Length: 115
Image (cartoon, rainbow, N blue to C red; front, side):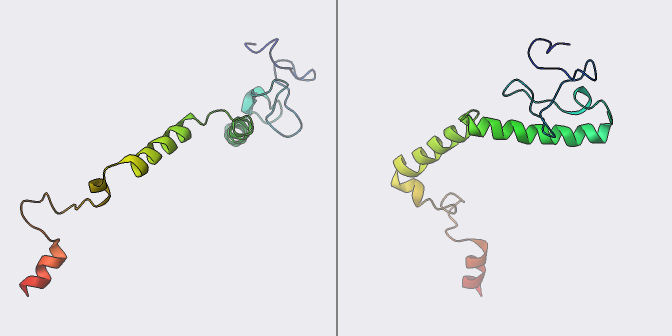
């Protein structure tokens, strides 16, 4: 009932949200129905889980098509560009063995020189 007036409900099954065809799309763009709220016939946990996965895919596609929800990817791209483009040269030529207490070679290299 909390979506009354927001999405259309199935007139043949009172209380169930009407989805478009076999998808999880509702009458309101960006609102998806899955599981027990839209399936008056099966209403089972496994069916609901599968329907929820379908709704997640529909929601991801909707966000992509409407250029929404990309903030994390955009931030990651900005940080990567900053790291790769503006960092000092020493960051590029960093030697992981330089701070190991005077040992200038890895274990493999030191064993071969000892033999």
